[in-house]
Every structure is written in C-alpha cells, then in structure tokens.
Length: 215
Image (cartoon, rainbow, N blue to C red):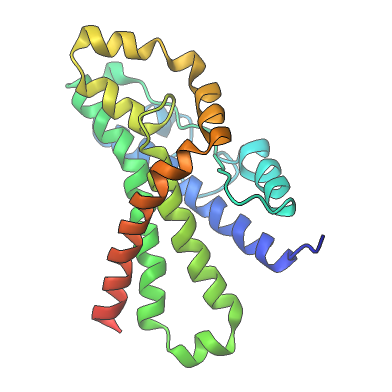
C-alpha cells in the first residue's frame, strides 16, 4: 500500500481550514444575533488552537487517508451556542445552523475562482496548486452537503427541528442521543452516498459554470 504524503498533507490543511471556518461562522452569526458565548470562549478566531479536535480534525482523517477510504468526514470542536440569548430562538437557531454549511460553500467558490484567475500555465507547472484547489472544492462541497443532512447532531437537523411545529420538533429532538449511530449506520449501508452525491453533482455543475463564465 503506497501512501501519498503530499496528498495527505494538503487534505489535512484544507480540512483544518474548512472545519474551523465552519465553526467560526456558527459562532459569529450567533454573536450577531445576541449570543456572546462563543466570543467569551475565545472561539471567534481563525487561530486553529481552540478549534482543533485531536480525533476529529487530525487522527480520524489521517487514518482514513492512509487507509484510502473513499468517504469519510472530519470535525472541529463544536462552537458553544446558547439559544436563550436569541430574540427569536427558532429562526435564529436556523440562521446559526446554516451559517456553517454556507461558509463551506463560500470556500468552495473561492477555491473555484482559483481555476478562473490563476493562469493555466502556473497550474500546469505546479501540480500541487491544482491538487489544493480540487481538494478545497471537493471537501467544502462535501462538508456543506453532509452537514445539511437532517440527522442529529448535524446542522440540517437543527433546521428541520426548528421548522417543525413544537410538538413534532420535540419528538424529533429525542433522536439527538442516537444521531451518531444513525449516521454510522446510514454510511455503512451506503445511503449517505446515494443521497449526497446527486446534490454534490448539482453544486459542482454550478461551480463549473462559474469557471466557464470567468475563464
């Protein structure tokens, strides 16, 4: 089994940036909506130190990359959010939830713009640049789509719970302790890929259109 150290390093850098920006986006929007919890905890910073989860940000991705897993995910320490500060708890929690995946889509667009504005001669001369841009696009699209799945504790579950009538939302909230096991089960049987890949394909098409227009 050959190990591509170059690819592993680039992937870890991209993943680290992407999950940290994701968490900061949650905290920043919560702060703008009146919740100072993330700011008090020192989490409204792009400094990776307070965000890195040794397992989710480093160990788990490294193991998956070394074993050449076709699909895996990564995470940083969740930013603390206290909805009791929100004036409109349900709507504001939805805004905080979509901020994370939204930040990943913005990052995907930024990496895409690299293909439009970096001369092809430079990209062709330095394969690492192309790998960096491709990895940035792929992982940020994946993180955005994955986190919007309506499965606890993902962001999409917050959106769904707060979009439902209170009684139904409370019943849905009872799934929270089992969410991780549900995710692992769906991943194992291949359901996650079948749901996510068509959505990701649509986003890739849109990003390719951006390159076509700007190139």
